[in-house]
Image: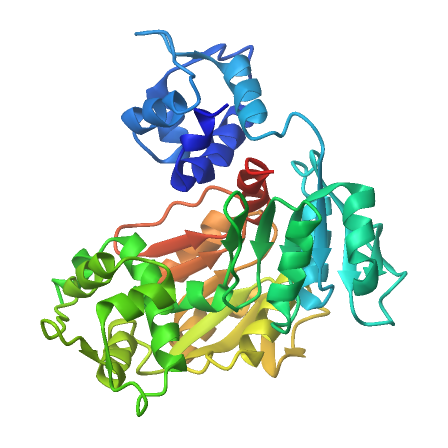
Length: 208
Length: 208
């Protein structure tokens, strides 16, 4: 377990790619997969596949490869997708609503359950988006505890973000997917990925 | 120019962070900035800042630093944000509509102009989202040429994505921001960033 924790973020970000590749394979047709085959499916090298897997104590058989179904289950276990993880989302505006609908429609969403939505707009409270209820910001602490939310999506305008994040962390949220274009501080042991469309477009401008 | 092209993607992705940091600074209050100060603002090291800048032939004065305003302009130039870049978006569903509205409201969007939207739904064609008109998929080739679109956002369901991308490339699109969860092949000299919320959540599950 301690050993797993040492995997760099860039490796962790590749794990869902491996998992997706292994899920689309027919395990009866292809019971064994080589690191070369897996590498080709995710657009990396065989050496990188072997190195990435070694972080988690997973090693293929020399000259043979990995058992396809077992490797898929191993990735699920490493990513903790072998059990349900409760997700919350704050800010049910255009983007937030699109994210909920998109995620709940996705066939791979199941272990990641969006359990509760939060918004400060009284008109939205009590409404449902893709069958998930919207609660008030005042209910945030109690609902995080009630639903055991471990992962929070931040999709609200950039006011008092830090205060909201601090509150979530205090109530046990372990990771954040952030769409708020503002600097956010998080303590050690908590993870935050920021997704910023404007910045994505700015870096793509370089290649035009 | 050839020299700039050698910068790895990971460096190019950091450039908007530097630019954002330099834009919020008061250049009269802080006419010179050290690599240490800039590093702290974007959450990296001074050595990384100097190395990143060296890819573009930008060097600070030993023991002094960089001229703040000049460095900001330099980043704008490197990212090609010193002139207007026309952006298109295909697929005005929940996510696509949210992206247009979010981007057009963003104060930093100006050089990146979403010039045209495309959708296959006849009910959407001719409508406007955030003042940008929706055209049919049949009009895609002519409109890419007419608006000189260099950057395309892909936000439509995963049918015939490859065909659409090939068409865009043939008409001169140089980079793609992709929200379609499907493998896409692009030729050398064209850039594609994929943003996949489900995969982001899956990798964040690791940290819960």
